[in-house]
Length: 256
Image (cartoon, rainbow, N blue to C red; front, top):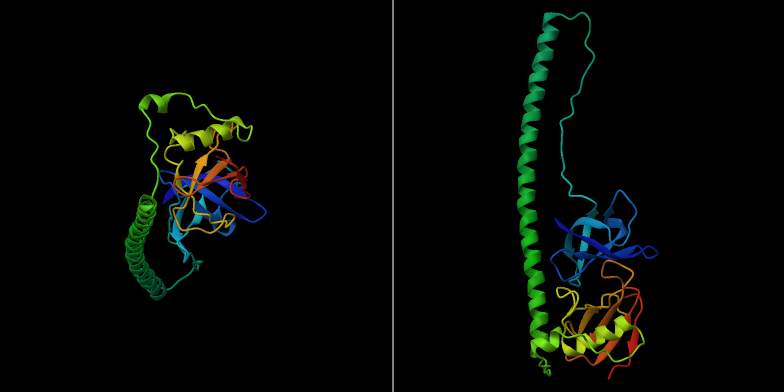
């Protein structure tokens, strides 16, 4: 079972994305798979299982607010006893009770064996899913590395010095993020910034996997990553797109 926080939720369309712990790729989820005890909100902590669909997209299943454990307890059937019984009836009742206990023991053993097989199968599926994910990420990295690029060389002193961002949009955070992209960092979220943007919403022109990269634009009024991103196209970046509503819409920026 995986865990993370809801980074985007579209209540009108009934879908959103989960920022997965220790994983760069976000996971899509639909309201049909949600089993939460409280309303869905961004920044909410959730637990889930995930699988890839026929388009190789990660989708969450059984999104919950806590790790679930399935407990099964046998149901005891009680029957009314007659006030007056013959010895034969009592013996028959005892025989039936013994038979029921034996049957229940057999059913419990079969259930445990079935659970064990299911757990083994689930573990195998999880291992295969992880292997598929890393293989896809390796392919994306190979594609990016094989594209001709111009490496921007900087000293450690230059990287640690304040960024002199040119005024492009008039927004300090946006302009500073563009400057960081152009000089190669350092970025505020090194595990997230610069990762592949998969264009699942289809709002940007269709390109091969690895063409788009996303970077966080800090929002001063929130304590998390917020909904603002800059998505670049090409390596080195040729196109810059700004989204302030977490991929629902994009604005192309004129960056030289």
